[in-house]
Image (cartoon, rainbow, N blue to C red; front, side, top):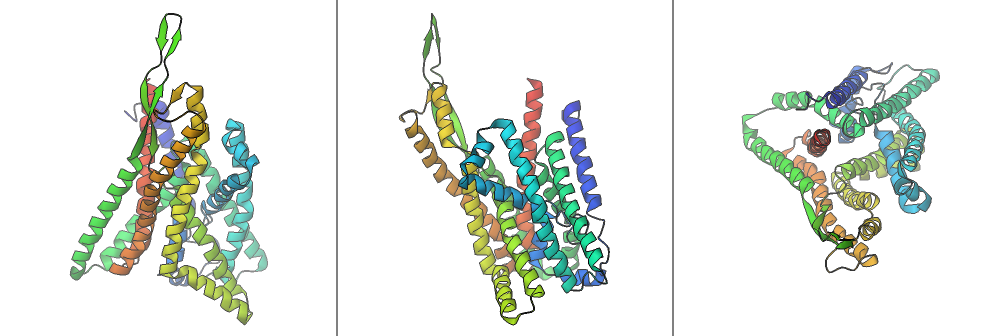
Length: 415
């Protein structure tokens, strides 16, 4: 059915072509790399492993797209935060329709450039101080910086093209492709370190793996139906309305976005502090930056901050995307009401109360799943699991979203 529909088939082929181009770009390294020191630099570094997820695997090879969609995601987070602080930006995003959303996206794109410059400069300096990039002049450094900033903008553009001309969210699909592309390497590493004594541990990990998949699917599909009744209307001899239906409120309105936002917020200060700790020669400041970097990379501190950020971003993104006042206004204008609740402000308060309660379940679930890999890593001693759990959550959520959008396209074309 999917490939019989020409329009849908072309969209899927466009997505596959864009993903192929992104994988080819991720294999082109910047000049001046010492491969042996690069391998040592990345080995056993969970911070860089997390960062590698956003780059689509380009970070581990120091490719021209090593920053991936990370700067664009950070810019989007900043813009989303500004909607809570500025009524003008909020109106642009929520009430000005398609024109307002285009302006919002344009500002996010413009903001991506300085963020990419800061991240690119910090990471290149870190690599230079660690002797991973050797024998380059100031001009070569500047050229490398322009290359990776251009690569970040190119990945952003590819992601937006996939969203517009393909199917699904382009940014999420690029991250998804980077995770899937690393699976053969991860499986190979685990097979090389395999021991018969670890069979019970692998069985437990498999059970956790299946439980996470089931939980993600269950929470993603779960919803709280709010009953809605349409008032009867008499027009001449015709009676309309009086129909009872329901308003579906999802337990996890935000999807995988809180995980991506939380990870991005954690990675950015880590990169800056890590760079400053190697760039600053002063003993006092160097020790301060080293202490801050050690705090953020501490497994317990990292896990707690990650959990809190995921929970907060779940509530935040739900508040941005679901407006109880607007829903209440739409119901009232359509002659609909919730049984037992007055139209207007009371309906808005009721919807906000219900949404707060069910979002708590979704937020806690996402938070637990986000830090569960760190707990499993501590118990099993397998470093690859640290990225695997978060990556699994992203992969399952992206696949669910993609399947739903394909089904929606098929249903729309049938009607």
